[in-house]
Image 1 (spheres, rainbow, N blue to C red):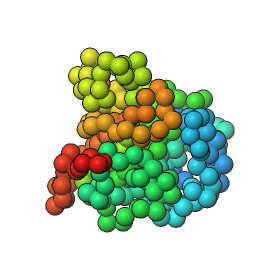
Image 2 (image 1 turned 30 degrees about the horizontal axis):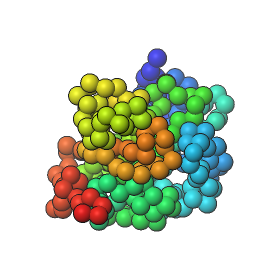
Image 3 (image 1 turned 135 degrees about the horizontal axis):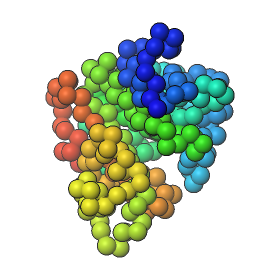
Image 4 (image 1 turned 90 degrees about the horizontal axis):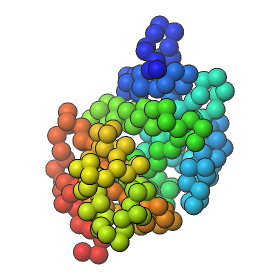
Length: 245
């Protein structure tokens, strides 16, 4: 059951109102604050058990460089953080199309955040296992798209895990696997969900999360274009060079 806006609902900034509508009943969305850091670290450890979770110092750095891009969903009854989405602004023409997460986020520090960037890069979207499958990830995605529109940015981009790929690694190249998922010939637990949420999968990234055995170390570059904003006078993401070429 989706929550409809009422007179008693929280007052949200304009770019977060659609996200609030997408939330399940009993949840709210806001920007991250310092008190959230320990819970976010715990969620990160639960969702990405093979990766090092964010530290409080790193989360403080994210907030310092781009406070408007760090979103939190809260379970109203308990006050617990249920999910988070962290973003930064980049000029993607300065990177390779298939650069991994640690390059695009400066090792998770976000020190490469560029206030003049035209792309909102989604560094992490995570939902606590106890709150998954309720639409929280979708609401967080809508929040970032609202920010893209509000700031008149061209697009948002990110990387999608492909946890179904390990079963096809000997039969399909990563790009062939992505193409089959896009044509709905295969269903991937994560990439298919992103496609249903309006993302487009552009190409494959090797070593996006090197310890992600389910994805065989691969991920997909995904993007959502803001139709209300013309593209910048730079190379399109698809024309960016690959690493080592």
